Length: 515
Image 1 (cartoon, one colour):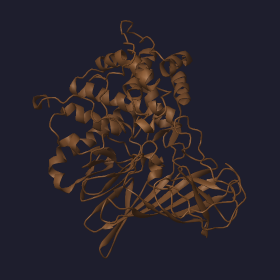
Image 2 (cartoon, helix red, strand yellow; image 1 turned 60 degrees about the vertical axis):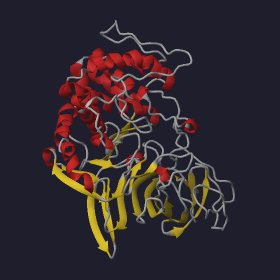
Image 3 (spheres, helix red, strand yellow; image 1 turned 90 degrees about the vertical axis):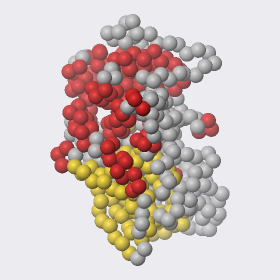
Image 4 (cartoon, one colour; image 1 turned 45 degrees about the vertical axis):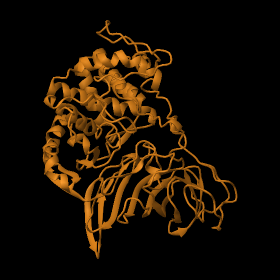
């Protein structure tokens, strides 16, 4: 953290995406970061967030900014004269630190706050930011709010939560959330966690939700729309609530009722569901992806209503986002280079579900993935060392190398250490790191401990090499090298999931008879 002399609030207008009401400190404020290889300016050193309290007021249209208040409770981990927050798409009206007005300015995608008094290590601080939250994307920024046919939803993965609210926008700093949404009475608002109150005053209703487990900022979810919340019970009396357009309630019920059995199936593979509730949010929007926001996964409505998608495929995509509740949400990546642990595992259980429920064999899918793996590595990097995003070309880190390419690593590991050890590893992984973050090194260490084998060479080759290593037990499998001047080609078996910022539903549509 850069330490500079503290200053008093002064009026100084700066041309910044953060605010038109910014003030300058005595020395230039600079954007900081926690040093993530893929997103070097995300997150901020010097403090550890304990909780967020987010309040949004929806104006009745999704084309105007929401009025918002973000309150952050955190511990300082070093002496701070300035506090950097990630925030880049709204107007800041005021900032307080521990109830006292504080100076603030913008630097890159950071909101830089200078409190009246500097903070000592181990201090408890409360930062309150009054701001707007703009749902209208700029020409060069995607993500954050998603405008639906009747309101809004959120899609913050990987680097977009700070387009919605000020935060420490990196999965390594998970926190508890309280979310309040005020909207006209004819709207329904839903967010992560469990309901904590509904208050109607005049023509507006305020809905409050709280998480019971820590959450990464990229997993925050808020839905505002003309929606119906459908309640049912999952395994062990788990509250399951789905959010659907009211007009489509009956149409979507055949899909909604599948969730409890899918949860039970996942519990049979890796152990108890890790959160206080689950459900699906079916949004009438064109996003190009589905997204595993914590306790409330976001899906495009058209995935369930548009003819042509095989039933087994749709169900396996539902399981993919459900699996993320264990892999990625409860156990979050320490850095974004650990993304393969999220997407590889979700793809693994998606494929395993398709094998068990629809006869789409895992081995056939992995063999096809192996054939494409060298091309994927050339285009996107090895699974645990993905290439950095290219915002100018709208290229993200969510490419096949971290989906089927990473599931292929898990398949190779199962072949290497045997099924009993692999199944033990999967359960131990989500149990040992529940509600926390974990890294690739942690996964390797646990795999070695459970299998009783040294695996450093295996993981080095499979996770970081430019070329795909030989598949244990399948010496006949071949990977086709990339052709100069040509990009990787997807195959139906090996590109089944549409992750954030990727093309939707990368499976050819089947004729209706195939459903």
